[in-house]
Length: 157
Length: 208
Image 1 (cartoon, rainbow over the protein chains, first blue to last red):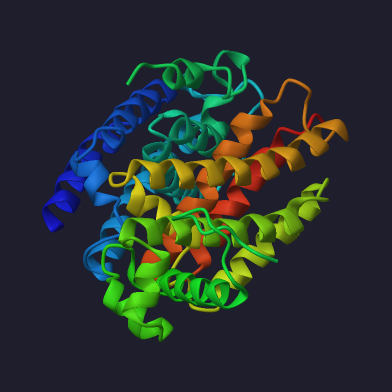
Image 2 (cartoon, rainbow over the protein chains, first blue to last red):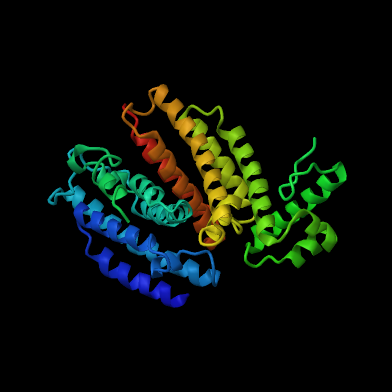
């Protein structure tokens, strides 16, 4: 169990550390959805409610921290307005990076459980759409549910 | 009230029905606390106090018992959620629903999670009939959430173009993920945060 945790964290650390704009966030998301929808992938195995609860809690804390750092970078770049991440509606100053990271992690966890149950990636994508709405919503000025995310929802996995 | 035995389709006597209910309730408790995989029929016999022949009279084996547990848990949760959500038509109403979920889960520091959610993670790669049964229950629960969101939309709190089913599905993901994070952390805070954030995002779609 610990090896899945280590593998997921290593890959997430590498991928999330490079996220500075929405396009990168979108490709991160696409990759994680694919991983979670692959039975027996390290991601799918790491999110099972089995094994030592302290190891799992430690794993989730570390993943949440990586997500919070990435969210924080996205918010910073939006505030300075010098990247494509700047929203035409202006920065949402009320977005809290730590709390957003909790919701993203919950969306990955709950969404993948519901998707595996339904054998359909849509629940996971819907959960991520909602979790990432403050970042994706500004894209093409369309709401998250009809923006980039829907092409992912329709992606044949 | 008489129930029809799932195994042979015949009607149960009041006494038979009571025995069956006792077995299912004991099995549901055990599976909730220790998981389906770790629950044996011997555990169920001990916890329910019924005899082996009584148990096999009602259930051919564990798979059949698991399906009865799914029906039992599902009925309880859907009834609870119908009571809680059936008349909600405002964001404050949704927040009260969230408060009750979190409060109930806090009783045991979130240690066991959502009764239906924990069944979901266990049946996904096992018995296909069980998987479909749990999946159907989630569709029903999501339908109740969609009902609330539709009433919000009718009242103007959500824009007409908002995709209600998509939002209800996303909210359910946040709720279930919240239960799971709480279960691992032995603390309901991440569950409260997750649902709060999801509701805040839904509220932010409001046209004004």
